[in-house]
Image 1 (cartoon, rainbow, N blue to C red):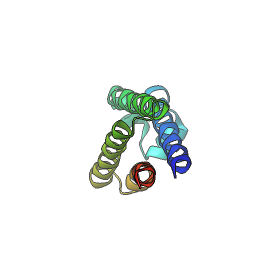
Image 2 (image 1 turned 120 degrees about the vertical axis):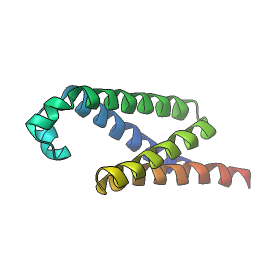
Image 3 (image 1 turned 45 degrees about the vertical axis):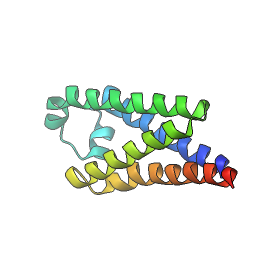
Image 4 (image 1 turned 45 degrees about the horizontal axis):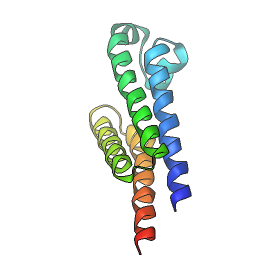
Length: 122
């Protein structure tokens, strides 16, 4: 179970690094605008906000990587739960598919991380 937890957590890290790069560096690129469903005008007007959002995603990825490398389960569980919550709020407030892209992988990583501790405790 721990190996699956690590793999799923790595997927969450890679996703958040990807979000950070898109939001911080390529927000006005046509491919990113198409993916996020934005217009050139909106992308230009919101570039600073997107970059700010991107740094939060980068920091989440860094914190999760630290918790994973040190196998700090409590920290991993808190961070993954925060990502699930943020994704659910994004699904509610922006676009429902955010729940699939952000919350679902984090929820699966959370469950397997939690179960990996339960298995070793019994």
